[in-house]
Amino acid sequence: MLQLKLEKATEAAKEKNAKTIAIQVPEGLKTKITEIVKEVEEKTGATVFAFVAPCFGACGVADEKAKALGADLLLHFGHTQFLGQHRIETVYLPLKYELGKKKLGLLVKKTAELLKKEKVKKIALCTTIQYLPYLSGVKKELGERGFVVLIGKGKNVEAGQLLGCNYTAVKSVAGKADAIVFFGDGLFHPLGISFCCNKPVFLVNPVEGTAERLKQQRDLFLRKRIAMIEKAGRAKSMAVWVSTKRGQQRMKLAMELKKKAEGKGKKAFIVVSDLLQPDYLLGVKAEAIASTACPRIALDDSSSFKQPIVNPGELLIALGEKKIEEYGFDELT
Ligand code: SF4
Image (cartoon, rainbow, N blue to C red; front, side, top):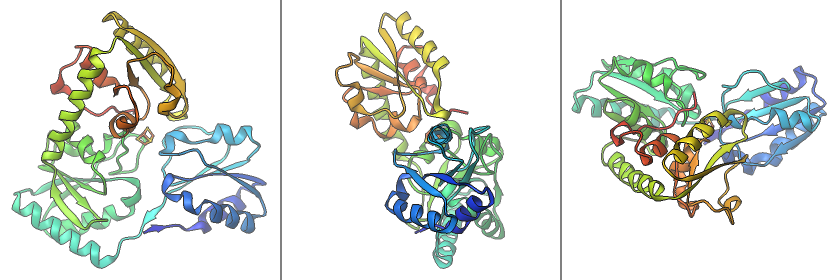
């Protein structure tokens, strides 16, 4: 369950003496957006407006738009800051998933048993923002059970924190560990880890209460991506897409990719939008898409697009400039 403590938001708004406040929430919190607006308005006396365009990370912080619309404060829920200066006062309000103490204790026990069975003694522990508050507790408990637990410091993230486009925290300690333990839900991050750290990866899922080793999921994923890369490689024309989101503006990279594709005899042109929606490309003559934006779009949402869609590293493989053995997730850091 998601823990939403609005006091922090209203305190921040009062402290900044804001008259007009903009709010940005992750998709998981959309159903609460009207309550959030109402409560912040009631507690601060300010006029509050909410952005409803999907926001998947701090890369999409809407400080510039909020300023243009007259806000003097932006409350950004659900992510940690990784971009530098903001155009207006911006307060980040991470959310915490509430996990029962008993469930957590059982999960740590299960994890310890699995690691013992797999003869793992030293682990690199990592997670995503939702479960970050639990990381030191899990480290302590596994430490008490005899494991050496390393939590790495990354670039533009908290200790042990991963983003879909940033694995620097785990990479900083992976070399000293026997295996990586990802504490969180979903397959995206464990897959990302498996491609950047040459170590066994264990998934400890606090929502499902499960602990398992990542195995066949990686091969299955890679097979699908190879099929996508081959399709992109056969395309004669290519749209190289750049997002206008503050943390995803990779025009220089897009220009380089365009040149490389042209060098292989393909037609390539750069297209730009905030979000990449499949219908934005209706009527655009491109047989494939190379996305320089959030890596999750090409990897998680490819089925929404009628063209094959690849990330920069995948495009280089498709163009024969990189080997499949060098496959890795695209990082924006
Ligand atoms: S680019 Fe994607 S993975 Fe990275 S912070 Fe933004 S939404 Fe998250």
